[in-house]
Length: 201
Image 1 (cartoon, rainbow, N blue to C red):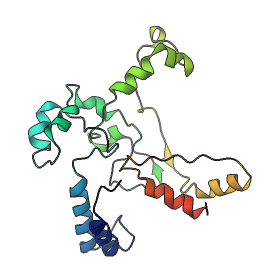
Image 2: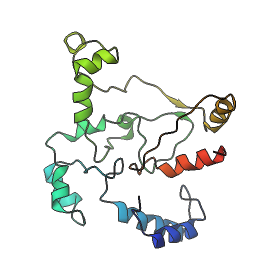
Image 3: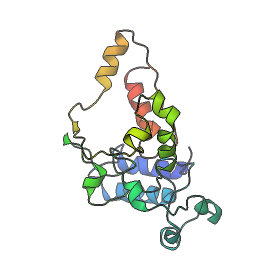
Image 4: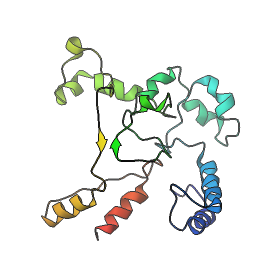
């Protein structure tokens, strides 16, 4: 999306030698920090959406912000922040390493909240009776309003890379649609491009 300059991209690439994760040298880390500083005001999960926040956050969160006040106002909401902690029950926090075994849920991360997110539209959509009928969910009158609850789910990381599965099924002539947007900084399209290229497509 052209969010950072070519110079910054070249600096971080040269300093990090293609490794931007885990233990990196001091010059690499300095360049990564510069990169993060340039992107600090953006909604990490949708760069074209405002960063949802409580009005009181204005003075502290945006003290060094280059965002115009009109854009910051778009994200103001009186809804309590705990609502947002359940929005992405299985989303992985940016910068937290992924390891084998139990998948840690957001509530287990000691109160860390997911920044910039609002589940208001998803809730309205999932509470619509036509939507509920289409996805074969019982009506609200029987089971109440939709609510995300991941506390009873126990996932483990045990597969590793899915590339071998993609190779196997495409070799069997299964048709595949790969869809990847370019608005998400947390799960960027560059990773998708890399594994698609590794398949030879």
